Image (cartoon, rainbow, N blue to C red):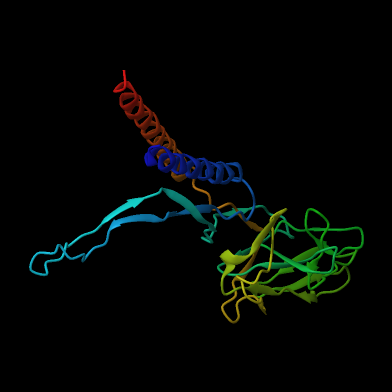
Length: 263
């Protein structure tokens, strides 16, 4: 059987997965804090028919190049691209955006911490700052019932104005977590990530210190997906899939020709 049939099939399967990633990027074009994915491809094993440098047997001459036959392609990784997304002003006092590196820390029901770039926070029935799914922000900060305004500084200090007081009260300090390899975080859905062995341990600090980003209140970070770029990637993916399909049909026609020789 012709090797090219299987080689082209790996190309088609690779482009199917590539299309899955592109579709996910496009689907999350309006997801707050979403980071687009990129597919990294690698070529497969090669059959070494003749090695470079093989002696020809004449006066110790050697062939300058070998003969290698490849077996196709595979997906090596899907990598998140942590470019800053566009800022969108919301006017909501509890909406926050991290400018530059870092993640908000979120307390999960099982006691572990998750991490997110989604700063669309709310308050629960007790006044605690929580995510849209009710998970509390870490460190836990509680907004008083009688607070008339909330101010969050660029370095993460949370202050509120209480009726009858002229000066605002500082009620909490936000912290930002950074990772040596943020692309190694494990996405668990709900705009959340979890630490992994590849990401390294979190480095927690106040916003604006030790390389952590700063806080921008009343803004949200939008998805960093660029629709025009994804449309171009989709066209390239489609054409690559088509040309690999043509390689399959061409190989089939060559086999038909070989079979017809017997008639």
